[in-house]
Figure 1: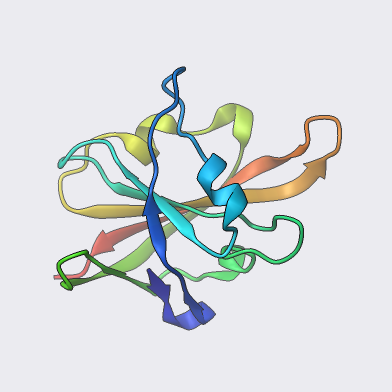
Figure 2: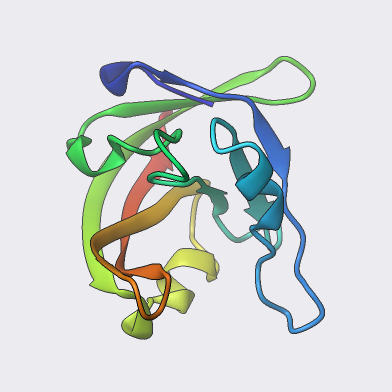
Length: 139
């Protein structure tokens, strides 16, 4: 996965759901320089997650600076490259996370980049917001 405008190029690993049907992000804790991808179904967007920081710098530390019109390149396991163009950026409270907009079906191939954002809550040991970049496959 690469975001040329942010000088991000990172290996990606597949993520699974945990026993509670939540996305298991634990593998990313061991490798904060990697992203993790999850695909619900062929009609849903590919979702790429990454840490904003984790005991120091992490892969999506600058994701909040991405601009609409930026490109994101995914290289599939078969070597085929897919280029997506960012069309919407959103910072939202985690408690109001737009699950359907992120994981729900889309009319065309889309991508979501997701990381933490906002203020870090020491009591919750987490950031209070999520940052989401929405992108469509470039024709």
